[in-house]
Length: 189
Ligand code: ADP
Image (tube, rainbow, N blue to C red; front, side, top):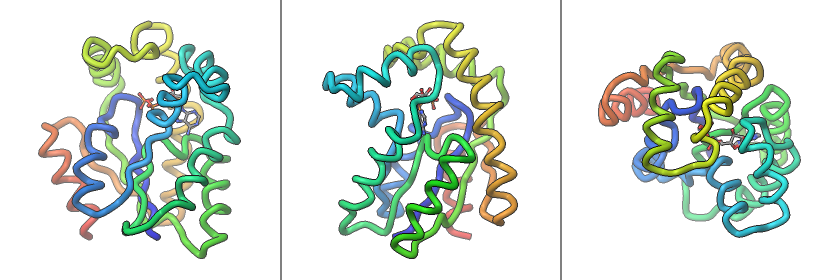
């Protein structure tokens, strides 16, 4: 199995890009945010725990997100691999991922970062709030906290994956098609 990571600040367009990429490269798209929102919608106890954290713009516990992913990894069939979106989000999650994959002699192939400036992050999230109605997109306070959390906890992953020679950057400021082509070019390299 091949494991690709779609990386970038909240609102960079990871979810938007993931569908077409997953189809093109025969990968299973796994978004931890979407999986958590599904748990919330289903009213599970996991969902109830996660909702409070998500609504404030804080991260959900490693055990919770990693448990959700590992059970999906184990179910893989008929695909080339996985396209991870929203995970890992911290250095400790990245280290846990490496340990998980080592069990099946797999590894992270590439980390593809969709880069947009902070001003665009806020703009895109506000736009998405109007369309998708996500609770964590509605409050300015929450959005600010998510951007701060990204810089403090997630951004250090750039150096982590650069050191492994796996980090690649795509310009996220273009149209959906332009960004798709930029990511495809990185995948095909
Ligand atoms: P965005 O890309 O806008 O940040 P996501 O859908 O990726 O949105 O995530 C929404 C929320 O779900 C995050 O703010 C966080 O609370 C929670 N979440 C998603 N992935 C993880 C993760 N890997 N670890 C911890 N919390 C997560």
